[in-house]
Image 1 (cartoon, one colour):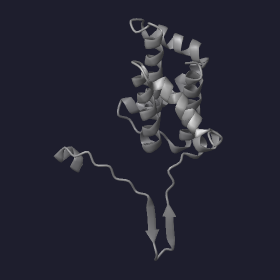
Image 2 (image 1 turned 30 degrees about the horizontal axis):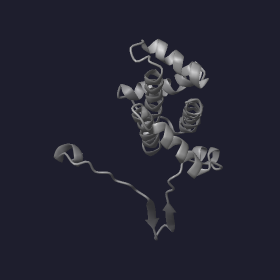
Image 3 (image 1 turned 90 degrees about the vertical axis):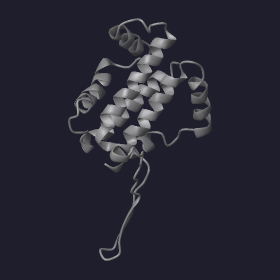
Image 4 (image 1 turned 90 degrees about the horizontal axis):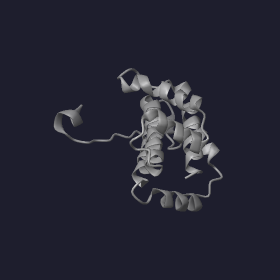
Length: 164
């Protein structure tokens, strides 16, 4: 609220809960276990090199937006679905830009994205269904749904990136 009233862009991060009286000392991790586990064997240097090559040039901004939104999805539990879907939408824009489909309608752009990535429409619709209420100011993602949102979104992003 202070940020709103004063125009300050504050971030508050709680990293630890400590209560000596209750013998509680809990340090929050930074990982999302379902993603950490699926990517545990990734060679970070090799993967970063490949991603850097994909993010250069005039269309790279769409991929960078995707990565920013994926990070936001991890940081903002209540808005996970919103950020996951927006990340995928950035990939649709990337696909449209690379394939001269910027002037095409969204149906054609989504079809091209699915054709290139090999992703089923049902997977994308699952993410969209989680995003739609959030886009209209309704309550956020249920914690039980987050793992499925993350794993489905990461599979979509991986599928597309493997083809471009």
